[in-house]
Length: 308
Image (tube, rainbow, N blue to C red):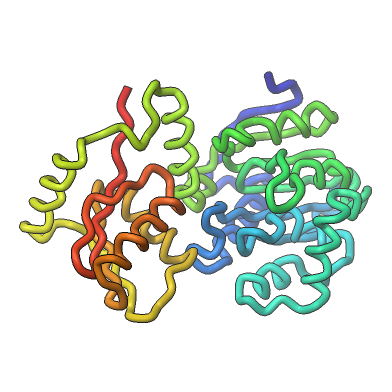
């Protein structure tokens, strides 16, 4: 159970108050990286503000999966490791990180939150998504905010990831940090694909059957897909010959599959046997997706709906 001083409030998007203003700037950070660059992670932005001068001490966003998250790039700036956390993140997303930023990644993986001891003492951190509390490819962001000495954290959206889901809030509040969750539609929207993925996993965990066994049978799904193809209503995502699929492709495909039951992936550079392997690779990369059919250089995919 989350402890006080955790506060749940709703702040209008056009509110003139300080929290709304700085959370809006954090949202701008979250929207900075190119579409899909953070897949399978969500786009997240962070702004850290001085308690005395009401000025921004640091700002940043999560650029690419495997690199530090938004809070850490903001703390890099606060701690004086980089001139701009935002610029450092932009360089990473552009695959042009300088040696200083590359070395910082290694240092952060080795030292974790110890890099930031009291660098943001009594400051307020504005983050679009709940700070993580678990070790993944990088250390937990909530621990870094704690070590930095922040007094207050304002969050735009809760993270339903079973590895987080309130754990970041609890870690902060247990240490005496004031946490406020702002039910902000913009923060939810910028991470909508990620939130859908996590909610799908959570829903599947609550059911007796795993997601892969739910929904229509394969035979029925093929018939449904065939009818959509016949009426030209099925969505198609094409890859140019020789183009290697990556995070942007997977994010776009994921977005289409949340909006449509079926999507056809067309890769002009592969044939049937390769298409089957390509389909298996996609299924391994994505949540709840199944291959319906492989014909020539096309793969028909669908995501079964979850029902109680």
